[in-house]
Length: 304
Ligand SMILES: Cc1ncc(COP(=O)(O)O)c(C=O)c1O
Image (cartoon, rainbow, N blue to C red; front, top):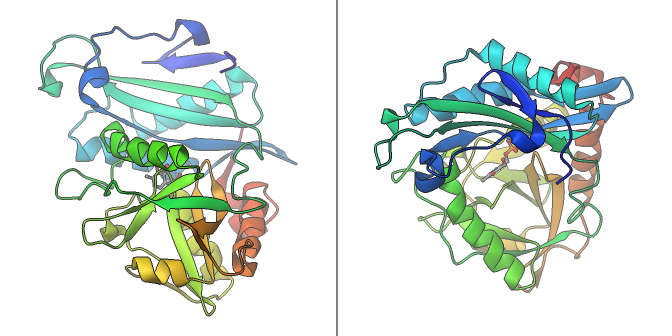
C-alpha cells in the first residue's frame, strides 16, 4: 500500500500513516461497520468519481439498516470524499468511506459507542483488476452459502457480510480459481464474493433479482441501464446452477472488477471458452461511460 495523501477521520484530514484506531474499537471485534467502495477514473477531461451520489446513498442506507447514526449529512460526506481525493492528488483511485462503532465500551451492544467515520483513498490504476478482462476468469461454485437475508440485511454493505465472502474467495483461490460464485439458501445463484453476476443465453441477458440475497451493486445497476439503452433483452430472475453452466456467456460486475468475463466454472467451459460477444460489448460500453465518452451517461461522473 502506497501511503499517499491524507485520510479523513471524523472531519479532520490526517496523514495516511497516522490514521489509526484503538485495538478495542468495537467494529474490530464485532464487525459493526458499514462501508463503500467507489472509483475515481482519470478521464480525458480530468479525474471523475463514478456515481458518487448513488454510493453515498447506499452508504447511508447501509447505516440505516443497522440503526447506525451517522453524524454527518450526505452533502458533508460527498464533500469530504471529494476533498480527500483532491488532497491525495491521485487521478485514479479507489475510495473507501467507512462508518464504524468506535472505541469506548466493550461488549456486544454497539450503540453504547459513537459512530466514527473515515474516508480513505489509494491508487488504483485502470487494468489493475485484470483477471477476466482479457482471457476470462475461472470461478468455483463455493461450498459456502451466501448469508440469508433473514439472518442479516444483505442489501447493506456491511463488514459482517464479508467473512462469508472471504471464506468463499479463499476457498476459490486455494483451489486454483480466480473467484468464487456463491449460491443462496434456495440453491440459486447469488453473486461472486465481491461482484454481481449475469448470464447470456440465446441473446437473453439474465441476472438474479435483489431478493436473491445479493448486494444492490452500482455497477450492476449501471450495466442494466446500459443493456436497456441498447434495447437488448434482460430479465431479473433466479438463475439455477444448471442454467449458469449451460449459459453462452457469463460475466460479473463490480466497482473493482468492472465488467469481467467468466469462461470456466468448476471444470466446465462456458460457451466457447472465450469472453463472449455481449460481454465484450458491455465491457467496452462500460469503460466508455466511466471515461466520459458516452454523452448519455455524463451525469454519472463527478469531475473533481
Ligand atoms: C458482495 C458484493 N456483491 C456485489 C458487489 C458489486 O457492487 P458494486 O457494483 O456497487 O461495486 C460488491 C462490491 O462492492 C460486493 O462486495
